[in-house]
Picture 1: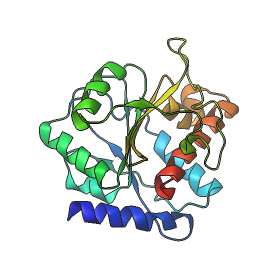
Picture 2: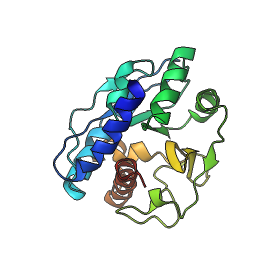
Picture 3: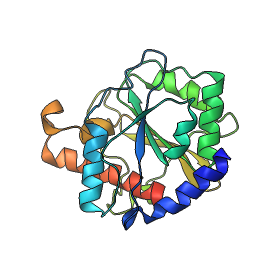
Length: 217
C-alpha cells in the first residue's frame, strides 16, 4: 500500500508546475546531530521555486521522522546537520522502501556530518554504491545551468564541492551534497552574510534539485 501510494503521489506531483500543491519535508533524525541547523533554508527555497519556476509548493515545512509512515506523503525530504546520525533498523527499512517507491532524500552536509552519514547510507542501500554525480547529469542542467557541478557556498577544508548519489533504475533517489553547504546558501541573508550572488547560485541549484525530483529526469 505504501509503495503504491508514493508512486501515485510522485507521478501526480509532476503537475506541481501548474496548479496542484505539493509538500516537502525536513528529516528529524537521532544521534545528536543538529537536524534543525538551517531553519530558514527550506522556506526560502520554496519561496524561490514558487516565484521563479511557477511551482506550487506548500510554504509550511513539516518535520518528519525517518521511521514514520508519513514520509510517504512527501516526494522530497531534506536532511542536514553537523554531527552524528543514527538510524534504527526500522528507520533504515522505512527509508529504503520510501526511496525505492519513488521518494527522494537530499542530504546536505553542513560540515562535520560526512563521517557519520556515509555508514548510514550504506546501511540503507548495502547493494548500491554511492557514486559521484558527473557534471553532465540532468540535475545540474534543469532550469539553471551548472556546467561545473555544485556551487561552492562556504569554504571549510579547501576541497571542491561534490555531489554523490544512489542511483536506482537510472534515477537518483538519494543525493548527498558535500563540501558545498548548499543549505547555508538558502538561508536568509542576515544569517551568514553571504553575497546575493552566492545565495542566488545556491537557490538556483536547489531549484534544479526540486525540478529534477518532480520532473523525474
